[in-house]
Image (cartoon, rainbow, N blue to C red; front, side, top):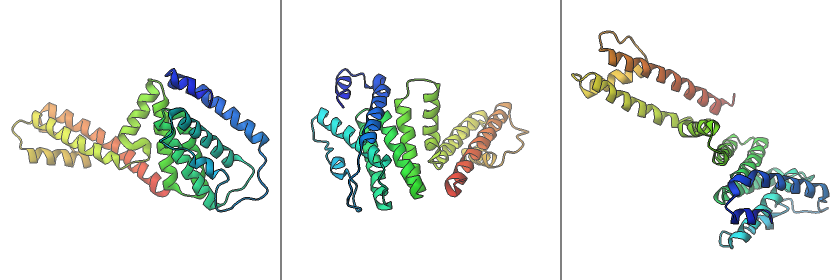
Length: 250
């Protein structure tokens, strides 16, 4: 925590966060090596419940970030420690990790947020809660994208987020299907100046669902319909693949 404050004051967090995270993991490993769990504990609550509640958005900046890092370290120790947690405790700990991840991202610490969401996703997987796991994996991918420097990988992740929520929101693709239909309808209307809007919409809708021969149409319209058929093939295949994965967990 002492290393975090000067970096924040120097506005160097985005370039030095990876090093800070390595330091964080070393400190956590040291604590685990020396950690002696209590012989008696309350099985209905988490061991470090008080630490998780110490974070307060009204605290001064340095104290708030220090409390947040302390909570993340405590949750990491509790999740990896020798004590076996009950199902109810694991649910609470997953929620703690999610809250910490959200706060880390708001504090400009996306790599720490990614780690917190990854821990939460792992706990949800163990509990068999696939919907909650997808939520955490989505947040983890979003944090990873924010943390990346401008590159092809960041652009690819950005496109995946925009089109289908990294694959965790397949129904978002339907919005882009509507956008495509509107765009191709307008373009076909320009290529077929003598057609009516309803007819062009019908032509594009039918061609999107079932590509057919465009003979008899002007060359520009034929090209547009061929391009539309390729878009429909790609987006339809991706949509159904993501939907099957989401429904049946293949």
